[in-house]
Image (tube, helix red, strand yellow):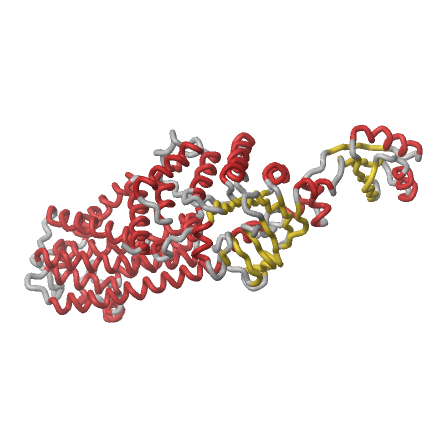
Length: 259
Length: 322
């Protein structure tokens, strides 16, 4: 086991432990997706009746979107923990040790990915309970989860990068609020792409959130999914994640030089 | 013997124009305590950051435990423990978990790792609180755990950046005992930075006074204090008297030295301040000068500063650092 890998596991363990000691966090993280699912499911139930929407049941359509959105939101706030660590001197304490530098970011990303997998599983099961059907089967569910987690990892890396550059909670909150929700509405989380205004469709084409929703929904909500569509989107998401992680390490260098 | 810590001409510039360090040089022998004394923003923490490989100097060089901090940072890191001003503890983890994680990143594993953590918890009197999250710790417990964490991998050189700032007097004395014991029994080399003259005096074999990024004086505590002999006597007159006469009157008092006359304020030093006061009052009365107040005080950090940095400590501290 190389040091970098071991250090990542140690840091992952630290972050997971901190989460598990916050019952309120666990409770809200479980409740939040249910609220989305029930709220939006009820609110927009009738939009499947719009000609051209292309789905029969809105809950079938929505469930994979909620999985992606939940992973996106969790990841978007990942940088808050980094700011806490910077403020408390935790990052500096580790930088004086031989710890693998990468693990200070990758530990958070792995933790985020694990939480993402668990949250996705919970939403998928809850979806079943409120009547969603997954004709794509297990393979589709795996594809959806992989896409959501890839998106989450990329966005989580970006969030940590912003944290390292801004180093202030207020800035982090402003950036996340500014970016996250618009990214959701500029994708097909709630609305079929075909029914979006033209300019939004063009934007969505470059929106990683939409790549994840498209691929995940194709995998899960259709019987006999178009796997080439799923895998191309997954490939783009992988590239997105790699680029974001690279940006985060650049931000880390900037931080180190500023000490 | 080779120095355990050695720095020559360290310069650190932040943001292109803030000169945090302006040529700091220092040396500490193995097994000794070396203190860096200075007000906020003097450059103490910056010096520690460079010596612990956290920050790179713009100029100058430094070796710690025989390794160059810029060229061999990985070797330096294995040899040192560092307790920063901001402690860097994980508040959501227990004391024990914090120690275990620290040991792990140094490659410690298994039984040896757990035994070392337990040993340090007991030694710092934290064994009862070991399995509580650090969030619940008092300030003194926090600082003890900080030091324990710095010692986890048995370093040769320990850096303590203001280890007692913010502690109550009791916890401070506790910490002093710990630090003295570490240097004495375990042969650690310790570099500590501090605000408190008393702390440097009690713990350090050598100290350097830092001001505005420069070392303005260094030596043993006795050497530095010796140059600042006696009590300070301050006299305020009711009205200004001709300088020359006052000066001559005070010169006649044999106990006094370092006499300064500034308008109505007179300052001087005497080996025994209380005993010199009657003579001072007598001499002033003989000149017809009316005295408004007299104060006698022991030499303070302020006096040391006044002497070496050319301004008072409290004034220097007010200049808000970066």
